[in-house]
Length: 235
Length: 315
Image (cartoon, rainbow over the protein chains, first blue to last red):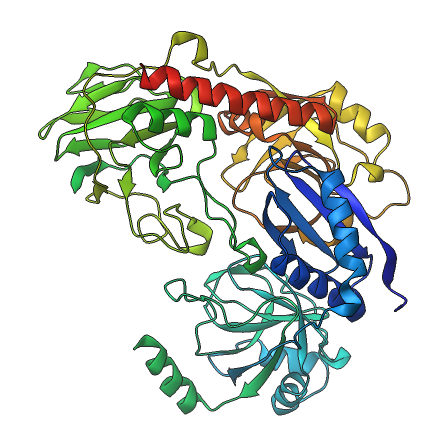
């Protein structure tokens, strides 16, 4: 088994309706892969009395109804599910391409990011749009993806003073993390671009394009394409 | 069915129901009423299922002009409600008619008042719930609190044949000293003497208190030496007591899904209404209970809710 993954899951009591299950203690693709597999297996075989499960970097919170089940039963069920993992085929993660207009009005901090690493904005765009990023977790605001795999040369501290309003669709960098703001919200990440597509569409039957465990690739687009795609989104 | 015209909205009046479940893994918190007891009773009174949408009023209720006949029930915080400028009582049903005006005074005890109507408040459902989530700009009235000029509608629901009331013995009081029962964890192992501080001292409710969480102030809760004060971000639970580096605890509520601070203990779900009714200046004391006891309290509480529903409905 991979080094970062616990041999045995670690359970933590979280109030009278929650059980936290930890599969490792680091931000590690192997641990997150285990979280994703267990989340999929649980979704497909939801133990009785479980209301909702929330997978994150390295752990899953299970929300349960204490009138129906309790942690001792859940622990047993989870241990059984875990041992059956090897026999279950886990579907491969989705790769979602997100078009991004970098720099200019869309990415007001790209010059700063470029200068702090002695790069040109063009090099920042190239470096940022090359990797396939792992979505470790979704949270903070609806659909906000916490992505791993930002090239080290782009690691840039947060803004000293966070913005009170970051525009919807902004793509940002904070230290070793990168992500996209699906709705306008306060935020302190360095903004390098913006996507014209809606990452959170509550009126759709599936309001999201991805979930934790999937992968994201950013595709640079021109400002003309940005305009064209955002006009299409409005319709 | 247009039922009320909002004359003044109050500082923070939102539509809430039992909550939006199934999307926390996508960053959508449950939202929903903070005081589930008051909401359930208000709905029982007007003859609705317990989780129907209600108005949650904070500190001061709205002023509403009635556009259509309905039964209403006011529960939760005491805000000296008046109908056509004459006092009306909480925890019982009142028939209101077109042309009536419903007003409230600033809160006298508690923090959040609830208004239920026959059939339930009606707004479009977003992802299975009518609850307003202001941070995500969804639910209720376009994801925002009520404002002047809004028309509040209700779903179809029959009016009552006889008025209903909650028997006195079940009406909660909202003292300014609040006891919150908690279960240790999820990160109680990051603390040793901090646990003693948590359970032996009192904490003041600060003005930084909203639907995301209540910031408290008191003797700093110390982490154990050599343990990290922040952790890899993980899911949060309403009731979780976060301890940031400064040792001043924050009780998390219904508008947060993930966080990277350690949680020393978690308030049990039946006591969330007690903190939801706290106002700045109140004092909070924490009590440690075992998980087994917490589950007994939970099941006793649900039995009591059943008994209340039956008593209200009458023979």
